[in-house]
Length: 212
Image (cartoon, rainbow, N blue to C red; front, side, top):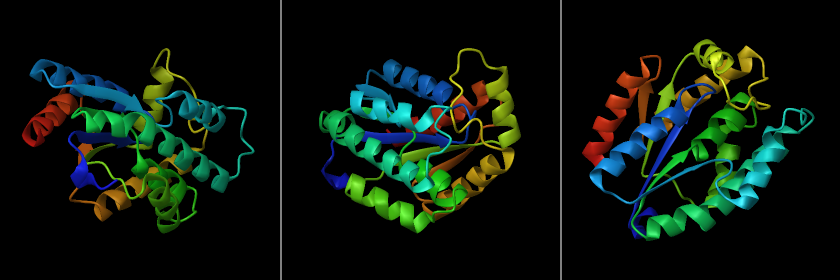
């Protein structure tokens, strides 16, 4: 599954809870629509039937007893099925795939914030994806206090098991993302997501236009 064999473009958005990924995906999809480019919008964990079932297991608020390594393995399993069933076929057709979360989420959340180790979680996911990485990733960086406040103020958004974690955990997630962004600086663009949605969207669209 080497990136060089693909015809399409694999773009991912990353960030902590309430960073605005879903909103920014809609803006980027709108740009691709205007440009007349074939595209697919999807999410992790989920996007297909099997992975959505795993998502329910992972994010259900009642599943507080879940072991951290079980969590990491379930994310990798959902990622594998989503990749081979939905992402790769779309890329083979030459589509631009916009995905809400991918491997960097596991590195930040399970690898760093949960304390399993970034290298250990990278190993699990490298096996699951056969070394697949996105072509480019936008990391929406925002203070956890801001992101969680957005969730509290929002209407209709699911409140999942990760939203219920203590603030310290979300601070660790942000630290993890910052480390991952430094590790893959050539692939990951760090975006200040504390600005207005319009400002953030314009910056993202300008960058995406440049790499299309």
